Amino acid sequence: MNLQNHHYYFLVLRKSYSQYENHCDIQVSMNELMNIFFCTQKNAKIIVKKLVDEVFLEFRPGKGRGNLSTILFLESLESSLLKQIEVLIANQELTKALELVKEFGAGTTAEEYVQSWIRNYFGYQKIHSSEEELEVLRFPIFRPITTYDPTRVFFDLDAHLVSQVFSTLVQYSRETEEFSPSLAHHWESNESKTRWTFYLRKKVQFHNGKELNAKLVKASLERVKNSPHSWLVQDIGEIVVDSKYALLIQLNRPNHLFLHYTAAVPMSIVYPPDFEEGIECPAGTGPYKFEKADADACTLTAFENYYGFRPHLDCIEIIKLSEEMQEKRMEESKIFLNTDETNAIPAKDWENRASIFSGTNVLILNASKKGPLANEEFRQTIQGMIDREEFLKIGHSRMGAAFGFHVTDRSKAVNTSAIKDAPLNEKITLSLITYKRHEADANILKKMLEDYGVHLIVNILDWDKILSKEVLLEADMVLFEGTPNEGLVSIFELLLFEDGFIYPLLTDVWKEKVDDYVNRIKAEGEHPRRIEMYGELENALVKSGVMIFLVHKQLDISYDYALEGVKITPRMWVDFGELWYKGGRN
Image (cartoon, helix red, strand yellow):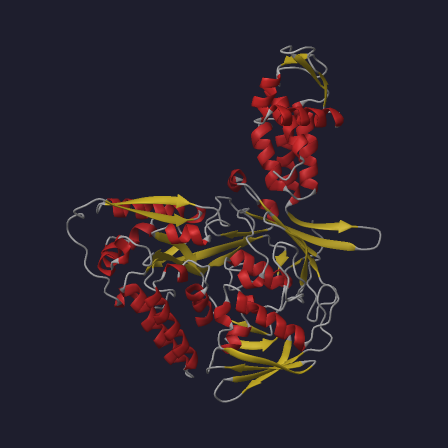
């Protein structure tokens, strides 16, 4: 609880004696106070003194050993709670405010205040001042933001926020399958794709006023070497600064996909290049800059000196809501992306866009862990236990059975071995980790395996806990949704990210196989052949039982008819820079 401890302790104490009115003498023992505060006698005395100093209560110690002391409350539980709620909301700490209400204020005016604030807060607003008019759009989210460091992003929400603040050397469009200038206005390579030269735009500013130059770009790219996304720069042998606005990148092997690499979010250019996450957010050169950035809230403001087109909206605010709020109808948010994290219902008069393919649910089996899954035949047997049609019964967000990352893949081309007619001879217990949005899928999988004698323990973890190496390596299975919507490089990211769901669970032999396939794919100059080669790799992973594709997913988008410029990014989020709101409405 990011709240001054003495405020929280007062709520705990006041709740314990909520039957008493203010200014009423209450006889208490020191043991009672120690039990209420769960602390030692010394600390209990310190807490009480602090509450007296802050004028929450009066305290008269008992005279003599064993005599009761007297406390007199100067403020009610509800009044104090409401004041603290107001402070938290002013600091955009809505999750903590909701936690306080849940613990101390259910059914009180404090709860009513929070509910009313939420209804009036989210959505589009014009904020008028004497000099200007600011347009603000506020979104709710139902998961934490796990990182703001481009070199550590993995989840789509984190990557999307980073892409709004930081820029890469070039941009890639999945619609046109073409590259366009970003920080580099021109680039060229030799025929073997081992030597690349990038020419930077002049006078591009970071959000802190520092000017972009080739030395900073070099340092920023080299920083990726010491990150979980080091696969992006493993081919780089040397980066040479040719001039203030030009740099040459020499590769150790041919890479026909290197432009895709430079367009990847983890290759974003940051300042300072040596910043450490957790101290502060680095500066970017993108259309928005961070005004606030923590796990539960993010505020983006338009960057006035952006080298491209300035965003239409002046401010974007994103705040995490608790699970209790997921059932509420978020009409006021103006835009609603159904990603299976909430049962909220969009307003009936909103525009509705056709559902789009978002990603694929994938089950990864931990082949590196000692136990039954280390055996390839047993992994193949697990595959045979799975009936993909059962997952489709969950809801409309499931498009169809999946046998590869993309809907157009080879369907049932890979024989995953026949299942035994009878259950296993011995009871086997396996563990699975996933996050809340996949809980229904995990429970269906649990039932399927139970029918064949495999007991599956399902652990639902928070977004910021599930990528822990210790947690991952202890799990037998991981269930997640892969969203490789930017071609082969985004698939490589899923396969090679060192802190992801796949790479840590591969055996050393499989890691070498994946690395070898990827290197050969990069060296291939013809795109159709690259796709064919990736298909061979995917087939091998599936056949070995390391990777089991379950179902393809779709994303539903609904939004207020007055909101324009709604464009969905490959990360399945709305491009904030394109949004604008028709005038005359609030």
